[in-house]
Amino acid sequence: MKISELSRRTGVPVASIKYFRREGLLPAGRATAATLAEYGEEHVQRLRLIKALTTLGGLSIAATRDVLATVDQAENTDKTLQAISYALPVPVTAASAGDADRDAAAESAAAADVMGLIAAMDWQVPGTSPHVRGLMTALRELRRLDADYRPERLVAYAELAHSIARLDLERAAAFDDSPALAEQAVIVLALSGPMLELLRRLAQEDQVRRRAAGGHPDAE
Amino acid sequence: MKISELSRRTGVPVASIKYFRREGLLPAGRATAATLAEYGEEHVQRLRLIKALTTLGGLSIAATRDVLATVDQAENTDKTLQAISYALPVPVTAASAGDADRDAAAESAAAADVMGLIAAMDWQVPGTSPHVRGLMTALRELRRLDADYRPERLVAYAELAHSIARLDLERAAAFDDSPALAEQAVIVLALSGPMLELLRRLAQEDQVRRRAAGGHPDAE
Image (cartoon, rainbow over all chains, first blue to last red; front, side, top):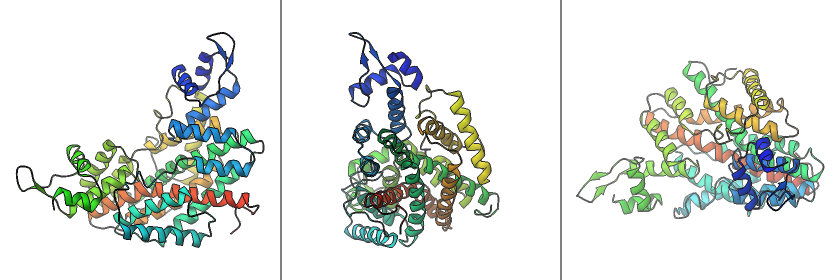
């Protein structure tokens, strides 16, 4: 199909398609003339994935490029999942939370919280994991903000996160052939976060409204 | 304290403090001279909240201003929680997911999924809720991407989201006096999302590694 048709099919403007081509996110079409290229279903699928990652997933163009490169180098299910799990940007980084803000006490307390939690959950992740560092940063800030911060509360959240991750993995690993698996894994690992956040916000709204209505927040 | 001390206490650069002042996020200090102002503990707390919302929470300056305005108009627990629940930006908006991309079938299917889910969960939220619209957009995109998309799977996620929201509300509502409540509510409602996402990513990493190690992903 022509680029105009590709645009119509995916809802991505022609200018954006050309931009994704230049940025190396979308493979070239089959050249049919000096200025014409023929695009196929694989371009439609790839464009929808790019759109999902950049809009729903909130990934930057650079992060999207990294993730897609991982998808294309997919070897087997486990390698693919592991690579994608690290290729996806981590919500909180030490940098984004301000390295200028040094607080040795909060720092080491947060590190102890994270390590204690990982041990309590028996999570097999290395201390060098970007997710471990991200959580340390998040907890350091929460410690300083939340007058009622209690590390023991983290376990309840972690148990729920564990159940969610299990749902994610069941979906992601249900695909056998590598390209499909890689794309599905990206969709699941990257997009179930935003979906879950919306469900959490909806559930919060429900419980807030029940409180306001004088009912018990957890009445069903 | 002087602005330099305020900067040292919070780790926020003086230039940023002045920027937050100009943007109306931070109240003025007590003028002690034409060019000098005295800041107090309330400024330290407010700056930490601003930093948490803009870094951990990923809120824009405009969104942060709206949330802080809500905090400052806090009347009672329920009104505050409800106001904050709407003041916080919704992860996915129709705009961000591309309005150009119209697909009536996916559109109405997603709407049906969301309404069915809300009924199944007995969530008391109006169809006009930004969270409902956000979830519809997310599901519309997921429907078009996820070869194995199954609406019935949403319930499992929704149940977990409900439990998480309950933990959130228990924490947020534990505060009686309004200013403290409002700030804590913002911290809990805005920041437990990123924290949860990190926990989910950690749990995903654990299960991916267990798969790679040949163990069962859900072996504990």
